[in-house]
Image (cartoon, rainbow, N blue to C red; front, side):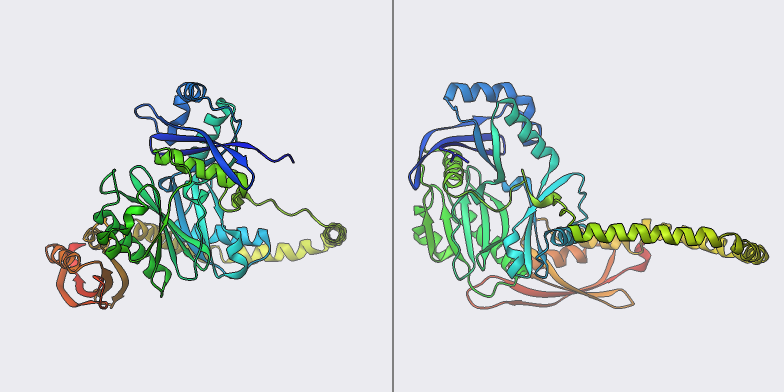
Length: 456
């Protein structure tokens, strides 16, 4: 196949499309032109096809001529899940196992999503990162590009277009976008999480945003069982700014990774990186355009064809034998029918009992005991990531002990105060709260409470 010399990088980010045209230049690439296209009001990645004519005009006016592209999407458009799996070499078994785990863990409707995973992780690790995208989002992107006569070669999370180098210690690549950062956490050389964090300010990396990033990474670290400190790598226009004193105190040592393109527009530069790296080294991970969400079943070998043929012949012989002895079994069948008629009343009584149990089971499924209490317990915890549970102990009297962690003491006290104000709970007490160690604001806590029966 003739190598591609010119390629478009296209990134769909919130209500903006970033486009860059890059050219291969030996072992590097150069940026020919780049620009951003703001979508019309109300248009997002979910309804792109309503803006076809405007995008077509934009490409023509800016002089983009390449007919092939690699496409990046925002982490806001994807859902990821880290699954624990044993090493599985067979692609079909691996696919089935991943799908079964997704169904059990996330109740995924596979008629609405496509997914892909890092297959290199499966062979040597006990976990695999799965990334999911809505089929309707994928369809909108493909339709828009088809209308402007651009062939997508690859559709992937945009941040994975960067050269995310892995280190011996856990590494968090912080990729800057116009109004957010995306955190790509690598462990053991493999991606284990990709999450967005909204900026406190659209202009720069503030200490507030940096603190939010480290808190999110700390929480990810607890869930992933990271034992080493995380090393940070910052990509974007604020890479050099991370060396100022206030940010160094938050991040520690930061590796600066400036983008190769420097147009002054972050989305353009990221699109150029995405296309340039694809020209030089095509990505192997997470391609929603041709992912492993629908593994091709392996072709049957001649050995299996022989086995199936033999099975068909054997089945024919068995059917013939059964047909030959069918008449001799008629009397036996008639005797069994008489026995069944003799126990009709017992069968009717048993069926009535089954119907009653089935009815009761449906009733309890719809209105489980202590549903109101459980709902109020859930609402007592804020939607932000300042506090979360790690364990729950319960006894037959519905007395419970909640265990968890929080980024500060106030978050714990706020939850205790909320629980004490609810009529669904009695005996709400803070049993324990303590800092996890020096140099961290993280706290362990334990809260006691009891469900009120009369609240049901």
